Image 1 (cartoon, rainbow, N blue to C red):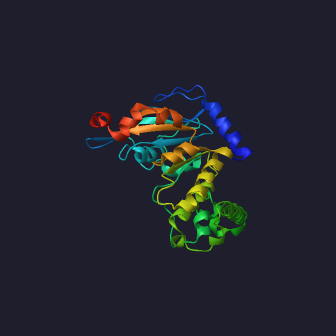
Image 2: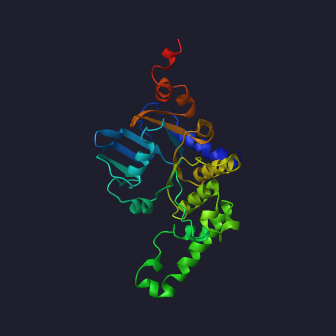
Image 3: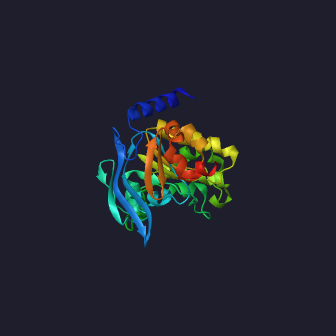
Amino acid sequence: MSDKEKAGKAAAGAALAGVPAEPGAPKADAILSATGVRRAFGGLVAVDVEHVEIQRGTITALIGPNGAGKTTFFNLLTGFDRPSRGSWDFDGRRADRMRSFQVARAGMVRTFQLTKALTRMSVLDNMLIGAADQVGERMWAGLVPRLWRGQEAANRERALVLLERFKLIDKREHYAGELSGGQRKLLEMARALMLEPKMIMLDEPMAGVNPALKQSLLEHIKDLREDGMTVLFVEHDMDMVHEIADWVAVMAAGQLITEGTPDQISADQRVIDAYLGAHHDAAQH
């Protein structure tokens, strides 16, 4: 573990010190705070979260069994779906009425379980479309190159720096569709950073990634915290959760059932019941 990583983990631990292991626990400096968020599809309630706060500058894992409502909750917070009711603030601003592009511009960017790379565009072009407020995309400004050439050059330089960081620089002229599943995950994470977000939300970043790239992805996620970003990720791999998460929030049947450190969560009977069924132990006797 590098000195930078040690410092980042220590700072996150200090920020979460004393936070009770209970659902909706208040945080000292929450970058995201959601209250009464409910999403129903007809008679099916997919999400019903009474309250949750995400501590700034930490890596928080959102876990739970299949069908717990984790991805739906992500979709709501990032403007890709609308709640039946509820509200949330991001970095001091009301965010529940924002559309997805407004959420991203505000500094909360997400990736998807199934990557959204534009397969018939080059890796570099995929990066460039991730840049915000591009002057050249405006109807009249696009006709005046001097208004956008400087910004385009800066965006290209930032894209190349990120591709170097994520070890994709040699693939920059390749079609994104030629990348492996793990490389597409790296590309999506790198593209998200083009917006210089305050918070990045990763939906199952390890899904479909081969073991050779898994450790690389883990290191990149830890680097996000060390660079001052907040990370919230959905994951099923508890080894990964233990390795990188500072805090864990657990959902089951659409509700937030508990929170805590990875060690606290692993020993929590509510979590064991949620994954294995409340009658699991009884069935063994």
